[in-house]
Length: 91
Image (tube, rainbow, N blue to C red; front, side, top):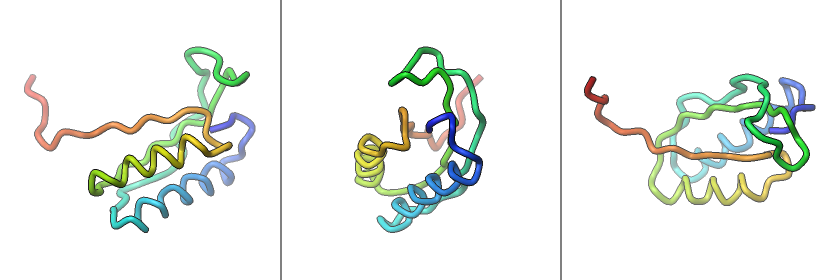
């Protein structure tokens, strides 16, 4: 998210997207501010950003809808959704 957001603003946006997951039948383990960091490269004129981490479980259609909404949100600089494996990795 944008670097000029306060912690409360970041949490408000995270809660909004958490609500989207829950509205579509998913469950959210946690959603909140992770850290404010320098971006690897400039995005839309921003060199820093507030990182948010949300762990959730939902049907396959939910991440697609969430990605669509994150992509059109003015508050979000960039987003990624990762699928977690059920099995732990072998070392």
